[in-house]
Length: 280
Image (cartoon, rainbow, N blue to C red; front, side):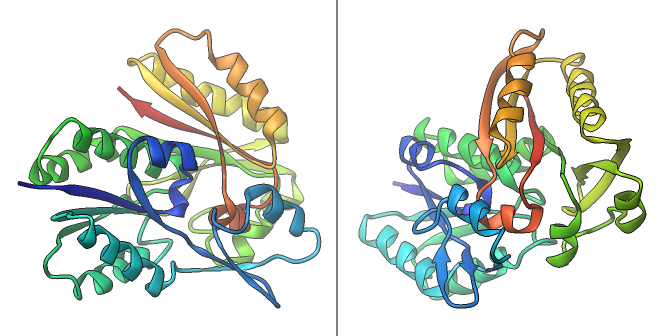
């Protein structure tokens, strides 16, 4: 009989409560400062990371191989026969490859590594839906087969206070930089099917960019019901206002707020506001 585990990385931005509720295992990214190192969501919180940006901008590194090894050993000890690892876009991180390498040393675990080609709660909602399928008694094969369809229904759009953090981290993708900064243009950034950042629209100023996010959402809602996650990075007040404005819209099935954690926040900086739209 199959016993299937769902594994993800901390770029999925799932809370501890959600991971416990759906029995999701996770491998934390490392947050590296000049004199110290932390594991995302284990010994550094989003608030601590954002506060530290005024003093030092840390770097990030892949989840520790030893940590992944420990997770897989625990799964074997707990009698798991199968594991599905659902990870951040391989265009932005080498996490999927790291997991594959460690899995080679665990031939007893039948495994599948899925590159979501997205991140944040757009990755997180795929993880949650896969975990629900496990709880519903679906087979390893059925869950794997469902993943591309889940990805097709998961969309990520966001705007930033500045592109400086993306440029520093080398993750600017196909998003225009310097000229837009000079003109106070605030791009709406979309994670494409190729798993990298693209400019969806350019707006002058913060207010217009958030209004554009609202327009993007209404276009999806015109087509059918959606679950919505407001994502915010050190911008909870703005995120809450956007959430309140969305709650009463037709076809909004569910709306929640998620904080962009250290693994991603290092590269986006404070002030991120975005939408994860999950078509249902």
